[in-house]
Length: 266
Image (cartoon, rainbow, N blue to C red; front, side, top):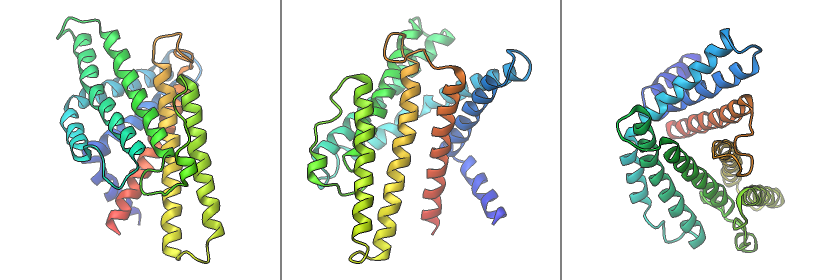
């Protein structure tokens, strides 16, 4: 079993996505450890420097992600016809935000290294704002019943997500979690009329939804922190909290990817 896990890790690290997940987790882990340890120099300073370099490495590697994102956006298009119209709309908007994120980040990176003459901070702010919008849309989309989880119409038609800033994040997250809890309660009430395989599948879907919401919420909290001061909690997080949220999000992403690989292997 240990050998199988080792070969699975090797196989993951040989892919771009797998390596990016590992570098992301290591970067945030170094930031968390470096900020939590006492003293600005020595080991804490080295860990923070390593975190910054690993983050720069990921930025450079994302220079090649535009076409992959474009392929995903084109393959999704306007969404499958059987899916709820609001869910499809949120998904399309999320894809647009993700697609625009990459050129903004590329321009910011190019301005930093001196390839183009531009105010890099403006482009960094725009890319972070687009990333945050994509994350918020993802959280709201999970709450509307993506990935095949069928939700009650009364819940799905609730008007949520139109409040500004942090209210939209809070309402979207609470709404999504409430829907998932109701679905779980509904499953427990119909155990006799539902096959064990169906129950297991739905439980796995609920678990995946909860983890996705937690992952996106942690990333969104960091995204808002990196925006210009004055917007919600922008600039107020201590470095250890940024590292903690990023580490939690990264570990959830690695866990979900490993579960997906195990499901395909089975």
